Image 1 (cartoon, helix red, strand yellow):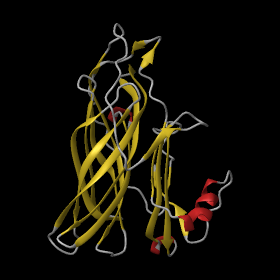
Image 2 (tube, helix red, strand yellow):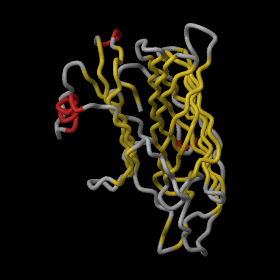
Image 3 (cartoon, one colour):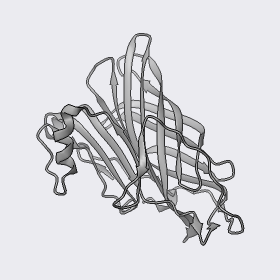
Length: 281
């Protein structure tokens, strides 16, 4: 994956992934309930992908949105689709879209407003002939994180980290997901953020996970660290089955947070992607 508006850093280092157990003898359980009212979530009709969408657009943006949704889109002046997938690890397994209003061009381009964030994830295949592919075990995914944050009405700061999905830990036994997401102030990344959420509901049937989170945002102009409440929703695609020492799962998701801390308003929107660490270059 690459950002159109900024050069990406080094691709993730390969890391050892966890092992999952097999459960072919058991019927697929109902799965944990995943409730995330902050997002639209549904299965797309055209591809069967699981969609997570955060829509910040207004009625006045309808014409702009329609241009992006055209079969042969032509980015309207003053707007841009910030993210394009090009990494072969994720090719065919997901589509990530971040539509934004921008000012300037090239190296001077800045994001002034995030209109819509979408993560479309290929279906999760954890059932074969009515039996579980995996019902037990722990799996690890790692990858990239992108964030857009506004502090006290100031211009939006963009953050990214090629290692920013530090860990997504999927526990099939407890049907929970632990996630750690970060960005820092380095290179083209302008804002430091972190999310550390444990035991989010994870549905081992659908691959959905998510729930309430707290996002920490470091004020670049002071020593203040803002902690604001928000929501995260992600999906798993592919299969937990192992082949050539890799499980076949990938993930993508969206998060958002908004709040006021000691009179300072903070807004955050972000997306992330990940895969088996051993699949990453």
